[in-house]
Length: 113
Length: 111
Image 1: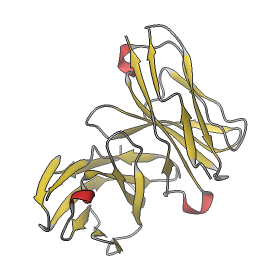
Image 2 (image 1 turned 60 degrees about the horizontal axis):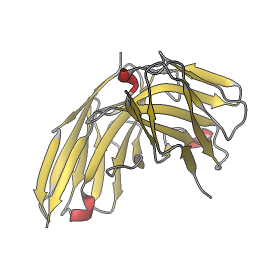
Image 3 (image 1 turned 90 degrees about the horizontal axis):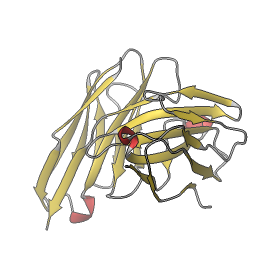
Image 4 (image 1 turned 120 degrees about the vertical axis):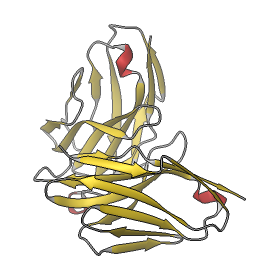
């Protein structure tokens, strides 16, 4: 049981480039989330999903896109990288009956230069 | 708009010196308040969920309490391995899944 896995661990992008951050969970959780965490700050919700085929915006969705075609996978796409998107990105999941109990992945550290 | 404020930003304790972390919140229709622990370079790890005022939860040296305006995370006789950033978050209203996090309190316990 690997839990929540994220790839890549680190990435450096040039301004204007696009990329996809991968997230997979093997716990059969219905809910999945993407957060960003800037240095010394808490987590900001980007997008979340309550099940396959259903996604919704969080607090800071601009510049990002998501899809949820399967229960296991929830990729996050950066459309055109900007320096303001330099951050650590965390994916998380939670079961339907304990929705507040979120399990987090190890994070992806992204730098945009 | 939901707001969560944690204090202090940083707390340094000697091993065995008990203290409390504060999380104050302003929400409309609290569904739950939760505490997470985050070690450097890692994702947060779930600790507790509190649902209603007066509720308490305990885990080893940690005890979380909830009132109508704030939550406290009490740390009794801390050890160096309790050093971490502690995050508080809330969910409110009708959108299950939308969480608002505070900026965290970084706890350092010196031996």
